[in-house]
Image: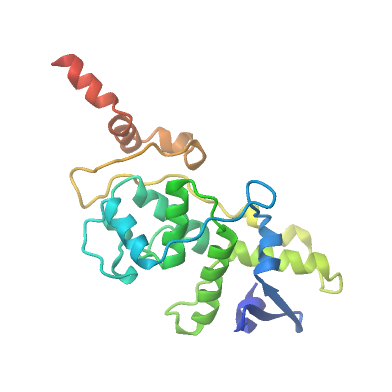
Length: 236
């Protein structure tokens, strides 16, 4: 993984890198094959992605509390729930982190747009665009932490499977993508606000029992599902 990021460079529409000092190339089609992402139906075309102005309108409609004139003005913490959590999930899946990434690039906002509208979006393309961005800007990072550890492992594993001359270390010490934990909890109420606005129920796939047992989640669910309003109406 370290060799990949130390040698990775963008060349036209592909990324060149070395493994065991041997040159390799990965592009969108390879990336799509690795992730096994395809249209829901055979020969079905992916939906066209919205441009920045439409995405900004979409984010305003979600209740972004700050003024946004361009995508760089977007702040995840200024989104209402559960969209703030969805954006956090996207950042977590891409970077491996859930904190410290308060902004959304256009490709990340387009992922959120596709999730919200349940569109048949070419997510592999959007993930690839973001991956390329990180490779292009790796030398301006302020820290030595690695972006995209999960995707890097997928790429390394793919080429190790194709090229059996790459040395194999003791598998006992290998760290696979499945070893990376995702979320144990999601904070659904900002610590900077007394109240929170909600607009939808989080999908079961985005929750677990630990999340559902949290008082903050129960409060969110009661408001988002309308149960609290029904209870108040009954008491009145």
